[in-house]
Length: 454
Ligand code: NAP
Image: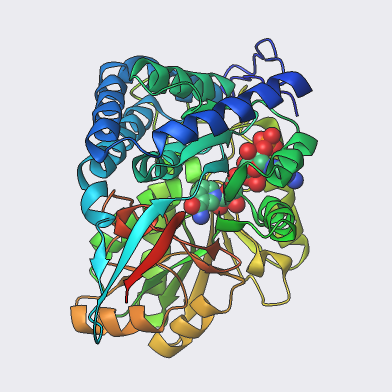
C-alpha cells in the first residue's frame, strides 16, 4: 500500500510519499549502523539529554502533532492531544529511569566476583500500527535509545505525516543521524531489512497476520522479536459490581479511539442477575454518541481509520449475523460521508460463530450472559487472544482472585484498561509475547552479559 494520507472524515486523499529506493535503504541502514558505533558508548546522561529535549518538543508541538493524528486516522482531537501527552511522558520516563533499570547487578558467588551488565545489542527494526501513531513508536524507540541501541521504524502506510513528524522531532532534539530512522518501505523491503545482518532485533505491533509473517522471517534469521498483537478483552461484570461504574467503563472501554485499540473492552460478560440492567444502560449509553468532525470538540465519535477498516468491520458483523448472532444495536455504516460505523451490540454469539473468536476493531461490542463467576472466567479464557481484561466487583480480594484466573497479560479491577509508562504492557497466546513500557520494556533488547572474576 502507498504511504499516503486519506482523511477518514473528509475521504480526501493527499499525494503519496515516495518509497525508499534500494540505494536509499542501503544508505539508511549504513547510517544507522555507523551511528550505533558511537551511540552505544555515549553516557546515560548524554542520551537522557536528547530524550528529555524530545519530550519537551513533543509538548511544545502538541497542537501540530495532535492535528496530524486526527487528519490521518480520525482520532478525536482531545484524544489526539492525550496521546501526544502520554507519548511525551513515556519518553521522559525512560530518560529518567533507564540508568537505574539497566544498572549492573552483582550475583553472590563463592569466591571472586560475578556481575551482570546490560549492554545494547545494535540496530533494531520496528513495524508499527496506525491506531496510536506516536504512542506505539515511543514505546519501542524511547527505551531502546536509552539502552544504547538505535532504531529504524516502518510505520503504517496510512500515517506517513505522523511518521515524518516524529523523525523530525528526534532530529530537532539532537539525536545523531541514524539514531532514529523512519523507513517508507514495501513489504518485500521489510523482509530484506529483517534479513540484513546489521539488524539485531525486531519488534512488531499489529495484527496476528503481520506478526506471524515478521516473526517467521526474524526466526529464520535467528533474531529476537517482541510481538504486540491483537486482543479480544473480556469485560466481566459480577453480581456485586457497582453498575454505574461498570457502565461508565464499558462505554469508554469499547468506544475510546472509536473502538480501535488492542486493549479495548470487546467481550462483555455479565452474570445473569445484572445482565438485563447492564444491557439496557449500556445500549442507552452507546446511543448517545454524536458522530462528527473529529477536529470538533463537540464530536464524541470519530470515523474509523480507513475505508478498508470500515468494510472489514461491516463484513464481520454481517458474517456474525449470518451465523446466528442477534444485532441488538446498530450494525451498519452511518448514512453520511466519512468512514463511520454505528455503535453496535451483538448477542447470541454461539461458540460455532466465527465472531466468537475474532477481534472486532471498532465500535462493536459482543454481549454474553453467564450464570456465575466460574462461567464468566471460562468464557473469558475461551479465546485465542490473551491481551487484557477487566473485572467489576465490589470485593477487591475476589477481584484479585478472578484476575488471577484470567489468561492474559494484564487485568484491571473496576476499570477498563489504560496505559501508563510504569505499567508493563503485553500479552500471551495469539496476542503475542514480550513486554513494552515499565522496567520490563527496556530489558527486551539488551545483552545480559555475565562477567565472572575467578
Ligand atoms: P497490521 O495490518 O498488522 O499493520 C501493522 C503494521 O504491520 C503496519 O506497519 C503494516 O504496514 C505492517 N504489516 C502488515 N502486514 C505486513 C506484512 N505482511 N509484512 C510486513 N509488515 C506488515 O495491523 P493494523 O490492522 O494496522 O492494526 C490493528 C491491529 O494491531 C489490531 O489487531 C490490534 O489489536 C493490533 N494492535 C496491538 C497492540 C498491542 O500492543 N498488542 C497495539 C495496537 C494495535 P502497512 O500499513 O504498510 O500495511
